[in-house]
Length: 168
Image 1 (cartoon, rainbow, N blue to C red):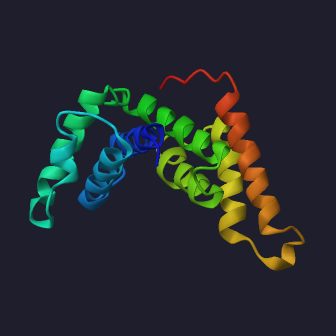
Image 2: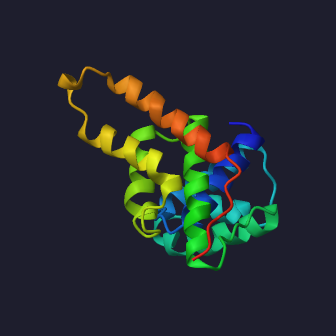
């Protein structure tokens, strides 16, 4: 792992946590260890990486401290709707760049984001892909790979469109 890879991992985990996804302390400590081995420098990084199992409850606070030291601390918008839109764009960008499985990502957008936003039209293509991927049957005459490609294309279109985050 390169220092850039380690920083990307930290940034990714920071966003997951900021958008309400659970990230276990073991994963936070492992990210710290990965970063330390990769040569990332931060005053608190060695403390995070060296936490023992009995010290895992300290990991979230130390992780945030390392994020702050590295300038990677992320806070989603304070407005809940704006935060949901930010999560949708982030999730779509992960699907688009291949770092998130299309079925997992579109399902997250469908169940955790679109629902809370009242199923806006802007998310309809991704929700449609989520339905197709969740209910796919071989008898449909379309491969699962094709449905995944469609989901990636929908995510790319959504993440590059100049959407203005709708107001309430």
